[in-house]
Length: 414
Ligand code: URA
Image (tube, rainbow, N blue to C red):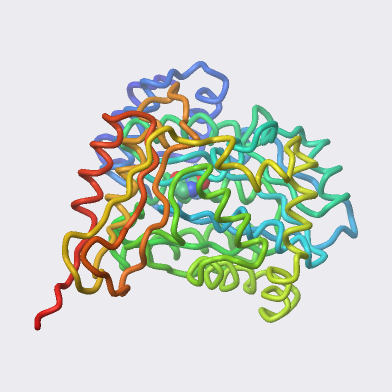
């Protein structure tokens, strides 16, 4: 296939055939089609969109770019959740072991940081020794043993998404509904699931800024899931302020550990249960009990140790990854916090080094923002609003400038 003609066709707003899409994805996965042509094509899709038929063809081509997990007959129901991405969204780290307490299998394939949003794989890799690149054999054996595996796309599992995801991250082509649908659903369909719940986010810290766009994305995701025989539900959740009190890789692992030990912040616990109950066998009360009585924590210990890490390291992750500079950002006025803009907090994290500007960038696990105060909290003059964890003064200054724009206090009038 002549790739410039294929790119032109999309650039000029024409519909691509399933065969053309499949051939292009095959060529990209094998390395025949280079990144620069794929980046141009992704930008054309960003501007011109795709029909439902094109989106379905892209999803299937990406799913079949590698193998599809084959579970043994008679194995427990396979369930999973996926978020469209947010700031401080560490739900997967809590929900995967929680659901595995329920005699379910959770073969979770996740991604890395994307745009300003954090990624489950980057968070897990902040745990020394943790391997997200399990082989299919290892994944199957681990599911049979403990009911949960948290892995990334590999050369055998969704390799097209592995490459395209990294390319979109650094070419400003993330917030495109067909590209998001194909990326998420190719991974989820490769897991061979019975039930899937999707957390579709909207707001300044999400790829979909408006609720209406998030509804369109949710409908497209659910239609693709159902078409492929997976019971798929979506919930729409706001991403106008960060989830929980932290954003940044090691900081989020720490908050997840606290949540698995029954000490999680209310918004994070609520969202985890809202999602988990959609695919669980047991009721919400039982899931909440497992979070509080150590059952989910013990499953996390098994998971971390099965994938090469040490659970004790996850409890002392902030000693392992300690940023040299810490700066408390305090309010100059008294009143009520009315805004903690998730998008700007995400940008602050990227400025600190928690995400990538180009595909080869290394992530700084230690940096990020903690002690983020929730919207609606009354504050005094000098009350801390958040703490910045920085590697150097330049990162700190940039993050502080974003933090200044991110917060708004409604002042008290005597
Ligand atoms: N999560 C994914 O896996 N892919 C996207 O494109 C967005 C969120």
